[in-house]
Length: 211
Image 1 (cartoon, one colour):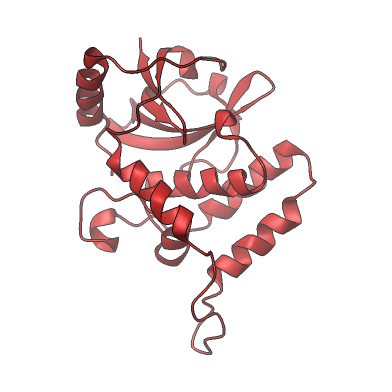
Image 2 (tube, rainbow, N blue to C red):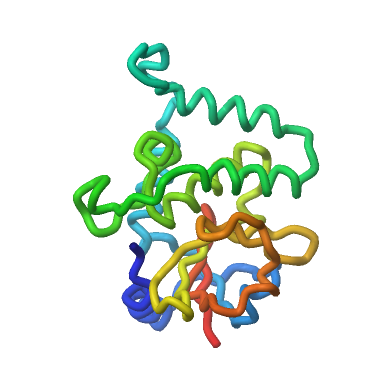
C-alpha cells in the first residue's frame, strides 16, 4: 500500500529545491492547485516500470500449458484489439472493468517488499495492489492510442478511510475521469469529495498538488 503522507514529505523537499517547469493544460484534480515539473528522477519505482515495460515483448512464455490458462498477455492484447476504433468513453469504461477483474494482492505477499510498482505483465500474472491496477490501465489506454498528456497516475489520500491510495485520471472533454479499483463505474472527478491528491505523474512530467 502506498504511503501518501511520506511521499508528500519527500516531494515537498524536492519541490523546494526547484525543478523544471512545464505547462499545465488540464483542469486541476479534485479542485486542488497543482505545480507541474519535468524531473522524474525522484520516482525510481515509476522509472523502473518504464524501463522494464519498454523491454517487454508482451508474449506469454508458456501459453499452451495444459495445466492452466496462462495466456494472460495474449488475452489482454485480443481485448485491446477489440476496442480499437470504438468511442473513447467506451474504451475507458472497458479498460477499467477489465483491470478490476483482478484480485487485490499486497506487494508484501507478491514480492516480499512493502512497495513495488508492477508492469502489465507482472500484474496480469500476479494481480497487485492499487498502483498496479492503475499502471495496468495506464498502459492499456496508451496501447489504444491515448497520449501521455491525457493520462495521469495519481497518488492520494482517501480522507474517508485515512489511507494512501492510487487512481488513474483520464482527461477527456475538459474533465478528468477517474478509474479506480475500488469503484465499478468511471466517474468525473467532480463527483468525488474524499480524495486528496498528493502528486500525479505520467511518462513526461509530475505534478505536485496543494490546497
